[in-house]
Every structure is written in structure tokens, then in C-alpha cells.
Length: 153
Length: 153
DNA sequence: TATTGTTATACTCTATAACTATA
DNA sequence: TATAGTTATAGAGTATAACAATA
Image (cartoon, rainbow over all chains, first blue to last red; front, side, top):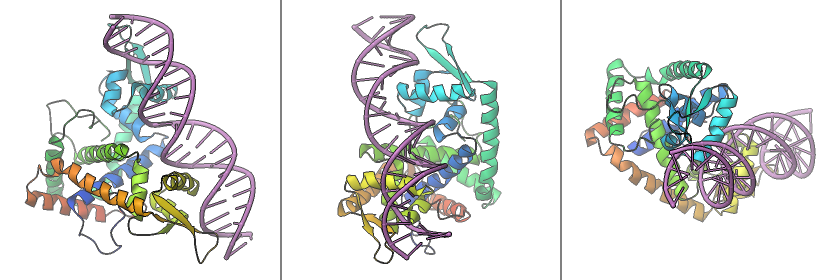
């Protein structure tokens, strides 16, 4: 879990939960580090990822991320100021604001995606191709069991 | 990766990297949510986890978490104020400060660990016991490939 | 009156820079 | 002089509450 490696050297008596949590921390640390290189927080990265192929209202985006709409305002403000995304009042509802990636934002999202792919190779390539497929399948099945659309992203 | 589920319904064309990242986000969201129930941030949870079975200097703790020592000061301040951990000047080096869990902090750490274990059951139990062992083994091998002690925790 | 967003305010997390105390 | 921590300051991320505009 949120614990340090048990004992440097004494491996393997962890539970699946421990390993899942460690994997999550390692992965997030990596994302975090890569993001920091471009001054992007994990949340900003998620926003870019989510908007890669859609245009969402503030509220929908907030729901996706599990955040308050007031938080979204600030988040979108900063990203917009940096030219990564844009706002537009909805054509059908004068109250609603739609958010979408700017060309620069889209390019940043693509570029980042490639960086992550590449940065994770040292980890994933530890496993043989068949094992990688098995791991992917197991994780997919596990994730499938998990509910809300707010959690992926 | 940091992307939303491809298309609600169209599953499975993701790469291993995508799935790893999604797993990480789901896991972190869960930890985050459980932590929030006790007003504990992910970082505070990590501190509790790391100190569960050790006593560290401020600098060592900062290294473990990959943070600046000034950040540690604030983090430890707040946790100490809440009675979760304590500071003590090192017996051997008057400049150094050692940090360790208070009894309340230890109890909180244990309690939280159990909560996480329990909260992840819906996910892990999707897999048969043999599959769980296989998943754990695969992840462990993958993690083993990864370097620094700053990244676990 | 209900919904969509924004603004005001406050707190945590984070970093950089300047500082104190000990080695 | 170098090292260990703290303090001052500033910015991002987060939430709650109050508000404006539209439905």
C-alpha cells in the first residue's frame, strides 16, 4: 500500500493490493515527472487526455475528473492562458461553456502520449510479449469491474 | 494513457501502457478518496506509510518522497499539529530532526491500510485466485526493473 | 426557480531563496 | 565552510459559499 518497499532485499511477501498500489505510485511518479518537464500537472495532463477527442462542458469535465466546477474554472483559466485549450459558449444553451483543445493543446497531448509510451518501455519490456499481453488482459478485466466514468480519464 | 476510455462500449484496443496508466489513475483515485474521508492527502498517506516501520530525518524523508526539505517542513508541521507524528532532535547530530509516528499516527496508518485492502477487493476479486497470483507476479517483475528508492514509498 | 459558470476566500502542496544553528 | 531545517514568499490545485446570467 502506501508503504515503502518492505525491506531492501526481502522481496515478494507483499499482497496483490500492495503491488497494485506500488505500481500506481511508480506510474504516477513517472507521469508526474514527465509532466513537470513541460510544466503540466497530473490534472492538466488528464484534461488534455480527456479532451483529445471530444469537446465538453465545464460541468461534464468536472464530473469526469471528480472535481468541483469552481476548480475547473481555475484549471481551465490557466490552461487557456497558456494557449492549450479554448472556451466557447454553447450554441444551444447560453449558460453553458464548452471547452476543447487548441491546435497547440492537441499537439502537446499527442507529444506527451508518445513520451509516456516511450518512458514506460523500460518497465514493460521487462516482460516477454506474451506476458505483456497477459498482463494487459488481466488489468483490463480488473478495470472492467470498476464503475464510474469519473474514474477513468 | 491520460486519456478517457476510448469509446463507451468499444473496449480493448488500448495498449499495455494505456491500461497501466488507467489502472494507476483508478488506484490513486481510490486512495485519494479514502484518504479524503480522513482528511489525508496522498502525500500524507505516503508519509504515514513510510514511517510505519521506521524513523527518518527530514532530509531522508524528503528524498524518499522526492520533495524539497522546505516542503517537508510544512507537511510535517501539519501532520504534527494533528497529532499524527512527532519530531525529535537527533541524539547524535544537533542539526538533524527525526520524524516518527505517534501512537495515533500508527493507528491511523494501520486502519487506513485495512481500508485500502478492503476497498480494492471489488477490483481484485474480479480475478480468480490463480489469476491474482499471476497478476501480482507480473507486476512484481515489472516493478523490479525500476530503479530509485525515491519512487516506491 | 433551477442550472451553468465565475468569483471570493481559504487551505494544502509544492518550489526557490534567504536565514539560523550546528558540524 | 558545509549541512540540516525552518521561514518567507509565491503559484497551482482543491473546496465551499455567494453571485450573475440564462433557462
